[in-house]
Image 1 (cartoon, rainbow, N blue to C red):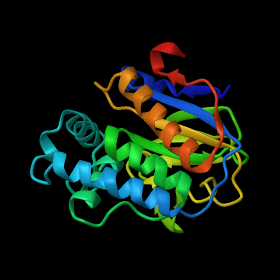
Image 2: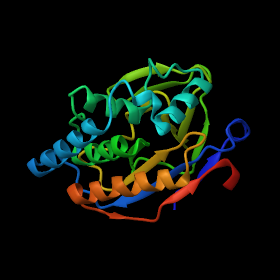
Image 3: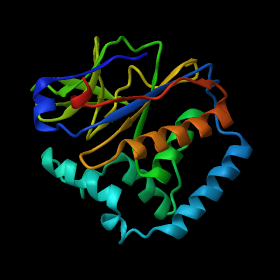
Image 4: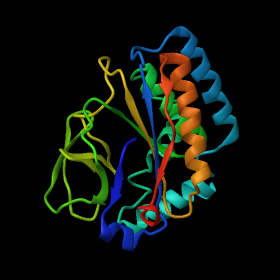
Length: 229
């Protein structure tokens, strides 16, 4: 079981925040198959018929993430919450990014449930995990070799060796899922007002998609919040 602690400053400022995680073992990471391509295309068409770009700001879950970004000092009309950004790609006709079967599977689940998700190579993770604020001047290398110097206001998920995810910027390069990954840590990030049921639903959907197209076997979902430390 993965252990997650909450920094006292975070717990005091965001007592109603929650994240959920699940380990999926024995996946086989690789490119999308033709079958997966067809499945994703059908799902993207369904989402395109359900939402409009103009109406996204009024979708309740998207509004909760946007409100949280404003509270963290980030303009969500310039830096989009991850689930909204994925859905916007679909509505703009770009489709989901083509990365790997595992990543594309949980990205689809994120776009469908509107919950921001991450996946990490479990072999790289060094527990315990901690939800904390960044340290002023802390430097991270995000996926794609993009470096960011943090202000000290960003909310992050970290392990013993450093940051895994910057809430407003994304995941780091060192722990990303790659073709050598066998075991995955899947994380669902909440925002104040987002229920545990929404996080669980997103993890279950992502698990179903990952196992359908990359195999693996899931472990129990774990929920964590400042009030349940």
